[in-house]
Image (cartoon, rainbow, N blue to C red; front, side, top):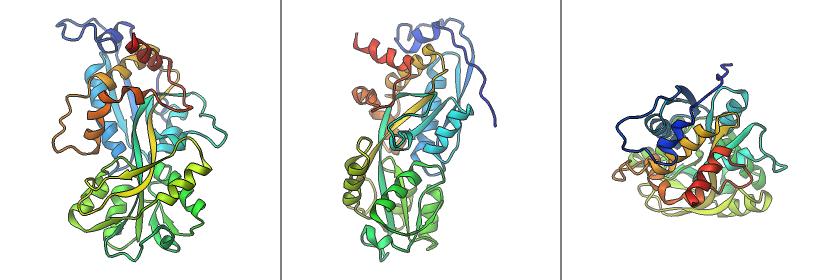
Length: 319
């Protein structure tokens, strides 16, 4: 296990980003250097691209800070690494973070809510699977181990009393396995569009299985993190709009990160994403490009407390 070092950041750094007071000044004050590690996700996942975009923005905009991304299984793997002190920041879906008794893992808090993931159940167009109950006995990918996809898809299968041959495969590998006939279907809890499904749909006809009933079951059994949603017809080539369930994603942080550092990171997320081009955008670009328009939802982290530095940034913005 690689333990992260104690971090310190000068209070002067926050003025450059969090308040925007010195943006455009030619001379910047000296600040302490800090190296951060951000847990992302597996190959083919929006988390991997979102994490990379976040790391680049923070490294460019927070004086003295550099951010390295750490590939992972995704949500629950990121929570594990955060609690073990292997990373400073991490992406997670809200349902994987909130325990059954409503508590939050000790030592962690949120910087902000980023965007909502949609649960995909994808099959090849010629598949005999037409509805959720047809998964009985089929070979399906549950996503990478310790991912949000695994967490939510297992809940859905349990609630629906469907027994399937579950495989633990990353999103990119799942798409390839489904294309080659090695599995019959794949779950993916991710942003829309997700690269793995989008790339597959560009080359081979695919379908999405409706999950409205499963959304209702999740909302009833686990009130709070789930909402009904629609994957639009514009998301994937040849795939009509499909009903499903959405889950918010949050950026987690260890509680022991300095308040000023987290204040500066929060300011970067909401003040310095507009430079990402909207033309030809993938899911990561689409999400980042809309953050400036969603500061109000950014503070909506449900029962997950905001880190004091993030809470201070949101308070400062209201003044």
